[in-house]
Image (cartoon, rainbow, N blue to C red):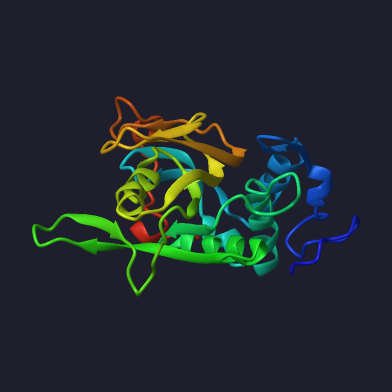
Length: 246
């Protein structure tokens, strides 16, 4: 079992750790974020260099003037433990016990998050990976012998929410199982305030909760719509899309 950090403990990448018992209040419908958790998550991203300014090509194809390089913060185990502790608390009942049975995530970042959230909850953590169909299309699938039993309650965790595409891509894989998705938990919401996702196949609605909401505008590419394109600022394709800028 993970020990709670005491008041006054410090993370090597910036500032005192916020005890989750202080940062949350309990309610029948779940635990509610206070102002401490979003501020702390932002601090972790800034102190690790995960929040960058510039002209970026986002995974969605749109351009942005700020970029979250999640693996800059996720490379620090102590930060992962702290962040995942807050994600885990979103699915604890009034008695402190988990209200879900399995934690699931997408490759790549979701693998790390699903494992650590599941570890703190005392559950299994599994992932769905991207596979290619014969027609060249892609989809997500639970492989490697992962199974979900009928009626098992699933908690989907992911890192950054921009357009919601990564969550929607997980839904067919989840709906192909006999389990029930009850919540999606996100570290950072930069979509403008997404609170739910709707399955295109079944119409089922799943609530979404995030630890930190970051209001960052994104732009269609081109000088007519993107200020950085108009000013001629070089475009950087960070992360797995291309080579990160220094």
